[in-house]
Image (cartoon, rainbow, N blue to C red; front, side, top):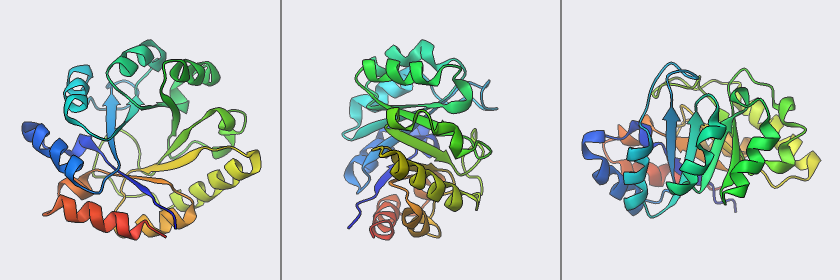
Length: 220
């Protein structure tokens, strides 16, 4: 039986009641907190920064999975380690020297992740896959929550899974964007290990029940 990780995206939380939403995730069947950091340059939006992550880390009782949608992420690797990130994902498209960046993340004691935009080919990870702990496959264009799921993601996840197996890597696959009860099971069957859900969880009438449903659907 595969125990898929559910990672609610805090970007979709109510920031007027942030502690309440953090406690909700703590009390739910969710496994991780997914934290999106945007700079308004790499993506056309700005999210929260270091002070908010510091508050989240103070109350969160589960793994902190940080996704950097920023240019020049190397400048902030040490800072995010100090703020409590357990996993730090950088965008392939934002890294001139990806291998060096992965080494720097691991040197700070974090798991190293690489996120890829919908248009980025899986084959570009061929030379670094054995150094990557997690690949975050973007199933929407990064920058805004609540977007529609891109159907090509299933094929992309399968292709990535094949690469991981062929290279004998221990990399896990995360899917981020438009995840709901309509596609969770199919994504896991394609090879996903982690499902990130934002609006679908936080806009639900009962977020804890919604997380439990995703967890059940993703257990195969």
